[in-house]
Image 1 (cartoon, rainbow, N blue to C red):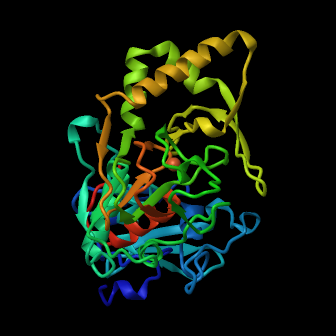
Image 2 (image 1 turned 180 degrees about the vertical axis):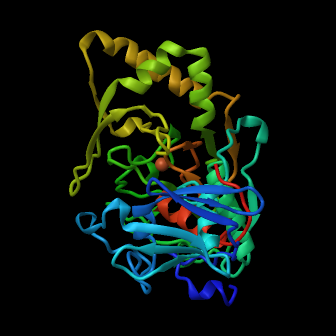
Length: 392
Ligand SMILES: [Fe+2]
């Protein structure tokens, strides 16, 4: 951080480079700001008040503390200019002058305040990729570059495999801690997927599992699922993954009537457990709208009942049959063995997962947990602070 910049508090904890302004003019309560290279920004007076130390920003927490009812009048800003160091200098009626960091203003002008900042664009994939994007996991806890690559793949492709990770039970928690909080569920902070004499889920049998997403019984199903292979000497049991983005794109083009029913007709989802009763009503496909992620509610073991007009039900069932056929189609689905030390993470709302049946006389132990999208996005933004990377 430059010495000059360190004297002007910004409403964040990002180390912005100092990018001196060329000019600033106040007109109709907006400040027109220009940089020498032609970049520009129009900033409203009250927004500047909220984001100025001395008026809105509290210097320790860097948050704006003005209750909207206490905002000054829009014309309380009486002058705007550029000071000798290139900062924005604001003069307020009945208040001291304030300075605004020109590098922070430049960050705003470049659109980097948006939620998608520093996140890669999502890219659809189909079966020709054959294998998950893979990152060396041996030293991942100490390797920030490896962590960034892992997280980038999770946002871009919706999944990533770490290879050669330590096969200790504690590793999953240690890796998760590099990202953020685990999303706990009624299966606990973490869970084990292995055969059990009294299974509480289809997952804990050796049975085949069709392509699905976990926990559509929740308002917001968990964002990402991590599965860490601690032991696997069972014959069979290959994992299968399908990109929901690719499937819904193909359905929209090739099966528009089914696609419409999958997007619009609602179902009840309800878990089956002695000590938990989660329910949610929604469509099989919730399209990404206004930056919200795609959410597939595709887990037939907990789909409970159709919530639609009687005359829609037969076609809605046929649409689900079509959806499942696409999810298992060789065009879209990849299949790969789980090796001991593999840790596969996937977007549980975008990517459908499943597995082939495996022999009951072998031992197969996966240790898993969930982490929400917010945690993955936040960590990637922090790792990319002050790097020149594009967003969506
Ligand atoms: Fe699952």
